[in-house]
Length: 83
Figure 1 (spheres, rainbow, N blue to C red):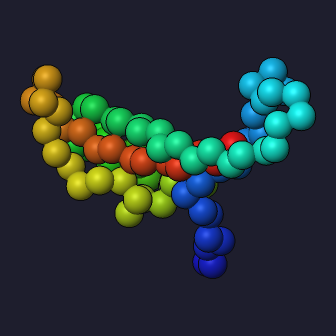
Figure 2 (cartoon, rainbow, N blue to C red; figure 1 turned 120 degrees about the vertical axis):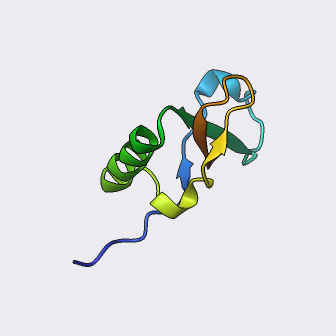
C-alpha cells in the first residue's frame, strides 16, 4: 500500500480583520504544540489513529517522556502553521 506524503504544516488565510487595510501580506509561521498525556498504550493508539487520519506521521511525535506535573507518560507533536 503506498502512502502519500503529508507535510507537517498547514496553510491558513488570516481573517480580513487581522490584516490592516492596504498592508502587504506578511507570511507568519507559528509552532503549535499538541500534547497527549495518558497511559503508554492509550498514547500509542491515539498516535496511530491520528496517523491513519492523515493528521501527522507517527514518527513526527516525540519519544515518550514523563509529564513534569503529573508524572504520567506523554508525547508531543509540533505542527507549524503558516498564515
